[in-house]
Image 1 (tube, one colour):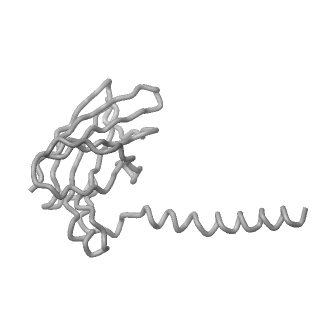
Image 2 (cartoon, rainbow, N blue to C red):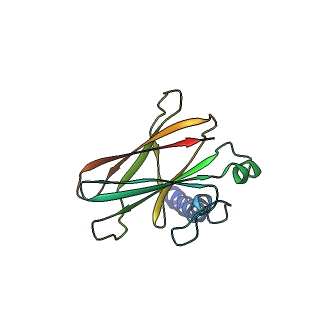
Image 3 (cartoon, rainbow, N blue to C red):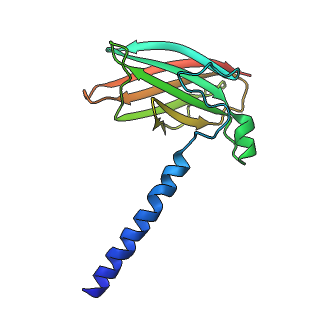
Length: 156
């Protein structure tokens, strides 16, 4: 019984300590190149065409963050942001958001989860090869419907 209590205390302590660390790791607020919807777009931001599928509108931006990431010792070069709105224009949340990136040479990568970051979902990507990339964003909202939005842009 004492052993079980000690294990429970240790587990509780580990979770208490790890939650703030995980939240801090997911925090991108200090990164240069991050663009919020209410700010003037950064000169290294590309807006991708918005699309509407089954009443849900997806708008996407691609930020060039290679300088900030290099300073942090990371190899990712871009941050993909995707915003979702309903027919009334209100921001909505998705249960699942993932992206498959197809490189300029036609190679499709594995699905990568996009993480909720305030009003948008985002993921850091390594887009090192110049050319046109395609981003297939798959979602599942609370209505249970799976939707796919496809964006593309040229990277220099």
